[in-house]
Image (cartoon, rainbow, N blue to C red; front, side, top):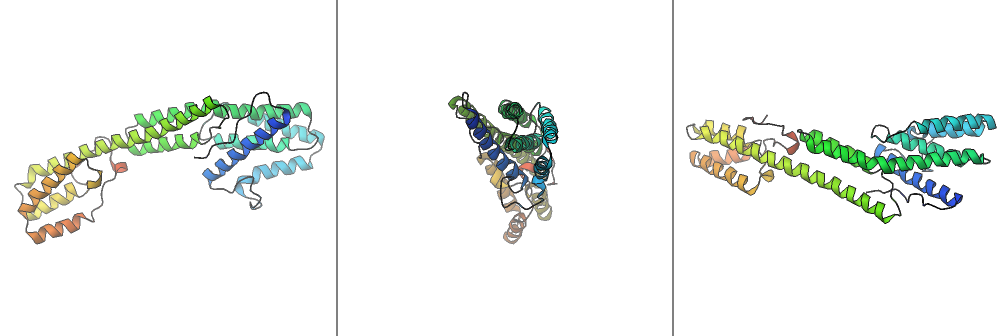
Length: 294
């Protein structure tokens, strides 16, 4: 997992503060473009007019062409844009980071007014602190929603969104803060294990219901009907996902079927079952009690 470069240290001088912000932004930019599949904003090999750098390129050009008053107006606009970010959400976090990069471009200007420079630096720091404070809460909320979701696919999507937000959490030279991040990351991974374990349990319950429905009718069926029952009831079940006890039941049922069929018919059944589409964990729905593999 990519972590952002060190957070700003209290008590450092202006140059060290500027360098720390620069490093922070560099790490954030790499992460943003990794997620978006774009070339890094700081990558000198980036193609002119690349979609991920268009706004920043335009900003640089405007600043280069503007006079002193024009620059000040542009900077005020960027400060106002940054000030609009009051919380961290997955839908807007890349815009937040883009705003931080815009402020970084402004700080690279020559002859920047000292007071204005401090305002820009302070706004950058506020956004970094916003990431630090809001990302953990947002991650935990999404993980909580994932655990509470009835639908496994929805739960996976929520968990993935939490993981994307987690990548925006700035690292720190503070051991306590770093331990907090490691705990947050570990809790996030534990949620994934919890989701899968619960879905495996549901899958086994569903598989046993499938077997139970088949057991009710197989004894009084003709061999051909018995084969069809196996295909509709057992076909969707993936034995790899069964617990030892469920797998025993699955095997015992096949043994019952084996006694009703000729060896040739049983071999054909085995060949057909081998290619029947299996229901995956993500395919299972709440209360899934079907008796056909749909």
